[in-house]
Image (tube, rainbow, N blue to C red; front, top):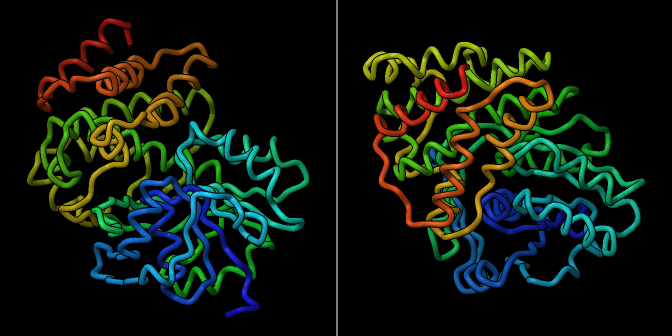
Length: 344
């Protein structure tokens, strides 16, 4: 594998360690750049990667090349950017000063515009938009668990050819799209649940088993879909149901939902949203890059998005602490009141 293209994970958090770890476990030359806490954890324990289907992979600490410094960027052929959206500009400036000639970049981040930001800071470079549809939870001591199904999605480009086999061997095949923007919006619609899951303070599967919480998600999605209709944006179909049908499914009684949801998306009991992780760890969340994107698009087209606006406010309040102990019924009433107050 010495002659194989080298991959660098820039932002070794849950997603970065999981994706890069699976690549490394299957023979790809991977280097990781992360914050001191994660670097120390992985150096002590290595990587232990599991998923909802029963995958169980280990990479010994001695075989994980991870550091806090950026030297690995100078030798990488492909950089996977997995930093939080708020850190994208800083990451882009670092990449601009370190990347070798001919190196390419994939943004595997939440939100819609990170690849665009990176392109602006990396003129002449190939920067592709990517998307990670599955949830990854950090479990401590170098363990990372993918708790839901999905395939890595990426903008179509010929420069991906040298890496396709490595991702396929890792069980993470790259699904290429000519219109990645439609895929991003479809993923963002699903990710509107992140804020609700964080406020619920429950595992995803438990939260989604309760109709009141699901109705909160449906309100946020229904509002976002109305904004997309005004903006003439058509999200891609990532699940067996078209995006406009999903709010209807979420509003169904628990017993009906439980049967139909099994055909939609597999989620195991360990899964939680990344926003839950951030609130739990006292970190700033990415709510401005998820629900906030709906609010910004609504403002651009002079329409209201009160439900998503209120969710942004509530998550920021939770960031500041102390966290309110919501019930599904209480949050639903709060969001319905926000909608009524705006006249929407």
